[in-house]
Length: 141
Image (cartoon, rainbow, N blue to C red; front, side, top):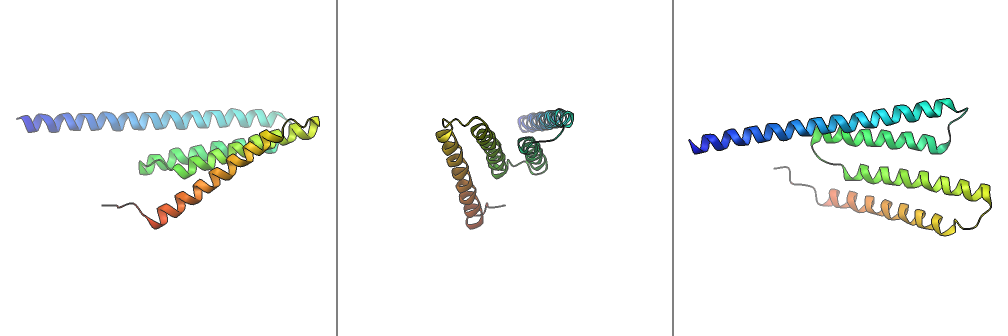
């Protein structure tokens, strides 16, 4: 009787966790699509799209891919999150460079160096992750 009650409780708990998992992924995916749609509409109202606008759409695309991969595999692809961070920093770098170029102000030097350093560190972390996953694969059993 005790074992049967424990199995029923485990089944109900697993069902609730899976339900929350799917609802949360659906909500996150919907928020990404919603945000990307309105960002695209905002870009369409302009006469042209800037490189920052295009990179923003790539960020939405990468976030959508992360949600899709997590939905299919139940594993969080850390590398894709780092790609999103690199794209976001690149977008920020282009914005700083554009402001620096247009204003002629030299106060952006350190900000630009810090952003470039962040991009390099994230790129190195991707190399480390790829090397580690190739040389030390996860045991599938």
